[in-house]
Length: 170
Image (cartoon, rainbow, N blue to C red):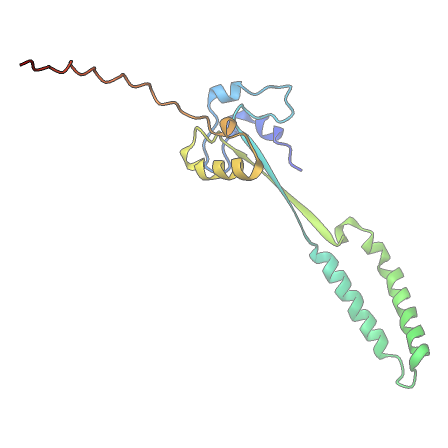
C-alpha cells in the first residue's frame, strides 16, 4: 500500500490528484512531521485496493491442462476403466509435481492485488470536489462538518419597526 507520507515529503509538488489544485503555503505548514500520514490539515488520502485474477496463474493452469490433454491422447484406446483412471491420475501427479514450483511462486498466485492512493485537496476549498465530498460523507461515514464546513449566513438586521398605526377618534 502506498504511504501518503511520500507525497508530503515533496511538499513543493503536493497537488490534488483529482483537480491539480496545489497545496497552499499555510496547508504545507500545517503538516505535522510526527504524523505518519504526512498530509496537510483538511487534505485526504484515499487508497483503493482491488483483488483481480492473475493472468499468469490462468496461463499456467491452461498450460497444465493442455499438457495433460496431450498426455491423455497418448493412452491407447484399449486401456479402459480403472486402468485408464490410474494412468490419468499418474499423469496428473507428474504434472502437479512439475508445476508445483511455479504455483508456489508469488508471481503465479491465483489472484493479485492492486493498490492506488490518491491525494485530494480540502473539499471545502475546491468547489469541483463537491460531488466527491458528498460521496465520501455518505459512503465512508465521515462527519459532514469535518469534510465540508458549514458556512453561516451573516445575521440580517431586523426590519425597521412599523410606525404605530394612527387611531381615528370620532
